[in-house]
Length: 292
Image (cartoon, rainbow, N blue to C red):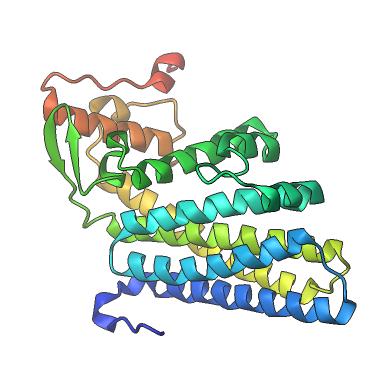
């Protein structure tokens, strides 16, 4: 069933992201058909490829729902499905490493838990500490939204309870970019799931080079869109945030540069001022570096 969203409900700045995610969905369908076609031609397969096909089918379902939910502004609901994609991606990446893992997945018989804990998968797949920290932090954010964790704040609820007061989200300035983040997160997971399936297929000698090139080219286009809009949004935030006095004489950051952690710190300070009249802005970078 195809659902058509009225044009007036779609943020025009999201058109490109919708198109790219739909292209990734098309490539996902192509991966499935090519894998099946190659298996008939070569007459060779293995359990890990069966699992890849199963997860690809679920991924394609998720893409349609995520696209609809983000477009309609229901990003918290979309985050639950993105978390589902993350967990499938981790499983499939781990399965692609060794056929033994595929047997573990297929022989799993416990209804109340998955074959592997998420923490174990992160540690097994990401040996670089920076990558591990980034992956775990990303997972934590989507997980808090899924489980309605109060520490998730406005990512978990439309109204946040802060210092036992209600903080209503005024999203007009940032809602479009928030949707962009969710579309990009969806695209990242689709790319990784497709890539893991292609890795397994290539292990069997399947010819998947052309579709792999299409996948990489489409994802790089998505990454370029996201990088461009991230820089634009950071610049807009930098221009619009009323900075504490300390920032006006900061020598820790080169003139003309934008430092994202500084913007985040300013945002935290602005929110703290709502509840503490005498709130103090603290910047470790300024304190540690002596101005000349």
